[in-house]
Image (cartoon, rainbow, N blue to C red; front, side, top):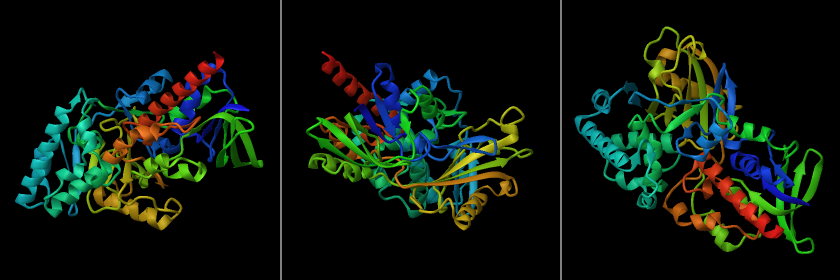
Length: 443
């Protein structure tokens, strides 16, 4: 009989066990793959720690606190440029005025794009303080960013749509204005105070937490197939398939950290209010391409930070460490992540050499000066990337967070924000619920 079984060893799953470690409970984390971390996946690519999912640590979040607590090495993301690739040309500039002026657009398109940028930045600065979004601006969570795109000329709409998808994963029609400000406008603002990059990659955080758990807390390559309440034991029976075959475990508490679309496939007896809440928003797929390139002798490439890539299979290219290059920094190499959020989930992509080669060629269309200089390529596709933070999810947040008996739910989709920082916050919330239940039982 376990005290807690956690379904999923991603960020929220490992963090839940980590936040409960002082209680000396019998905790088991069941992870379907062979490693912890889930969508915070990091790979070693040509001497660089490259993130194929979550990319940054955000200020004033549980992720930042954990990185400090776990003594991880981080550097600030300090962009000085913003770029746009459109109509076959890549323009990267230090000011938005210079950027727009140099784009291959008509005068009316330039005027419209400038107006949109100015409006987005005005709103961004009104709702942020020292690079952090004000938490009391809940009105922004109830309206979509799409309302600001209506009436734009097609050429301008194409650029803004790619910028939004590249910075914030999802369809603008389903994306809250609050989410867009954090993940889109902050790049336009060249914000230097809200993001950091972990030198060991985002997966360094769950790996470090896992290292502080009792041995054998996490069972790898173990797929949970069902969870059912057993009256006779007054406990939950968790069915699984693992390296040793099919089996069951009993537990007092269950924590689901699965992506929202997968929850009903494992927890089949959920009440209607929970399944309705789980189906009220999207958790879109995404495909990423990590590239490491040698830029020795080239000028300016190290300063590239965020480039919108309209018309490409990916929406944006991000360099997580702009300005950091040279003998003391990755030996003159720079890394880029191409985010194909509009492309979505592409089964078999990583193993398809032809498709990966097409993406690399598209990257070289944006950055032709790097032809012959690429030293590492890594492709990854995610069926369920991050839960979109839109008005529908905000309206259903209480039901998404609400436990069903002693089945608790933690993930980016149950958070007020999104991504790994949301998942860590939710792991702590659920750990607090279990902590309170244990204290009540002991009394």
